Image 1 (tube, helix red, strand yellow):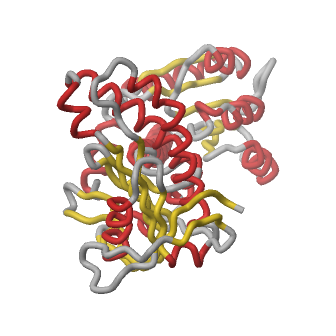
Image 2 (cartoon, helix red, strand yellow):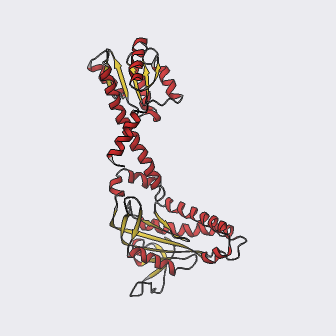
Image 3 (cartoon, helix red, strand yellow):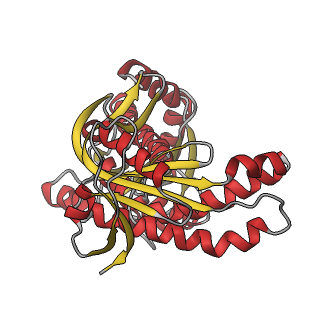
Amino acid sequence: MDNIESKTIIESKILSRPTVLVADDDWLNRDLLRVYLENAGFRVEAFVNGEEAWLAVEAGLQPDIVLSDMQMPKMDGLGLCQRIKQHFPTQLVPVVIVTGMDDEEERLRAIKAGADDFVTKPFNSLVLLTRVRSLLRIKFLYDELENRNKLLRQVLNRYVDEEVANVILTDPEKYLKLGGETRFVTVLFADVRGFTRFTESNTPTKVVETLNKVYNQFIEVVFEHKGTFDKFLGDGLITFFGAPVSQADDTLRALKTALEMQHRFSLLENEINQGVQAPLRGVGIGIHAGEAVVGNIGSERTMDYTVIGDTVNTARRLQEEAGPGEIYISEAVYAQVPTAKVLRLAPKMLHGKSEPFPTFALLGLG
């Protein structure tokens, strides 16, 4: 969203009768504020003291801005301000203290309570309305940023777990810009074996239902181990570790993910294959580590956060060699986790490789 669009949204909110909470025990000041504000297009909720105003907020009133007298019975303006700022739904709502005492000590007390601005009695209506509109613009800008962050978080949660999403949101420009960068990553390909015959022998509803059960488990495992989900490939998926956030144990977590995927599938196997003519035969997994291009690939309108390069292709070829229930890893992966329990296999002639490729079967972790 560009600056012009954001400005248009904010100005439209200011014109859409924002709610002003007024708290003042002086009926004349209260009525004057109501008249000024309503004539300027605001909706006013007025209360005779801070306690009544706070009870209304607790009951669900969501003001866009608060104008409060300093001195009131039961709960003064500072008490109301503190509660507004400590209450999560209203903590970003601007509070203006309306006071008859224009001295530094009063202002300091109000600032400590969280006040955003001051208006001195008797107040000038033009000054008052200008300050209200200015604070509302800031408040609505915060709201707009929060809405954008929520939307961004929803998108991120499709690819990474919440902890990684929080890191990305600290600097979205760094992590989410269009384009790629070369990173050291560990790529995992997983493929459900026997899927073609399974689709031929079962209804589309059964096929989708079964895939969803398997994928729900696999994605849960990926997020538990803080991997980045890339995409589904019909009967398989790609995930990678090391981007957008890199950690020292990226490759180890990839191995843990693969082992847990095999375990989860074994728990599902009897259920999903019950009563079918061509059962699913297991999962083949391939893992390779190395440099790859990672980033948002596509256009400004449509992009995917993905990984491309020979490292990805090699992981896929290892997966193609693995049988049901097997996890094949490369020498580069084994070098990252030398404590892994492996079986050294005869080098594989992988598609696209000119030389036999050193390959290991992962048996467990030391």
